[in-house]
Image (cartoon, rainbow, N blue to C red; front, side, top):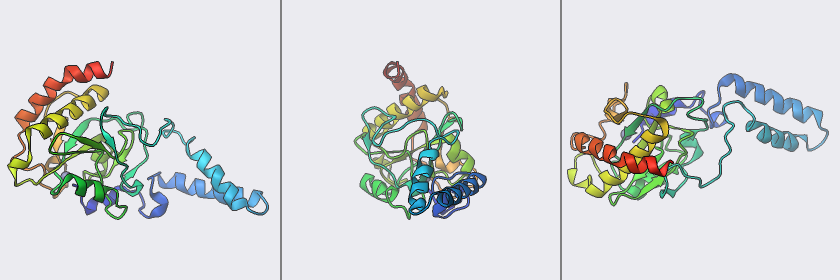
Length: 239
Ligand SMILES: [Zn+2]
């Protein structure tokens, strides 16, 4: 899971930076809002707000159209994380995606979904995998999820949570390994990542983290073998 330090990922903090735009742009948009309100007599503020929303999508680097419920991993269940737990981006065009980060929830699948929907949590992953292999997608791969406790790693990674506890090896079921491996294989195909331990890492390996997941019982050799075996199907699925 993420940590309190994930909060530091949000530039500037506070509600105004929910989508994490650089400070300079925030200031200039605020200027635009004031200017727009002044230019329109009566009810101007509301109009300016609409204008602001329209212009939002014209900010360079946030240009790809998107729809609520759209998925990157075919067959996943879409359950949106709170927008407070990620920020809008346009990956891989603005940030290159160069790794997958493996987490363990320290709790159940429903608990992970619940906390990632909570704006007060301050962290969430793109995906959560259940013990039976079922996958929930909570954040688009285009966007930056706060999960690694390291801004640079967040910007360039895709985070996957796994139901269970690090000290309970029986939680890491064959079905969960297989479902997660299919997901990671798809990510490797989408972004051209080699299937190795440089590009598929544990949260514990992120510089600066105090998290230990996925822990010593996560079987990396088994997982990477399953990811490699899932590559041909992932390539076919992506045409
Ligand atoms: Zn973690």
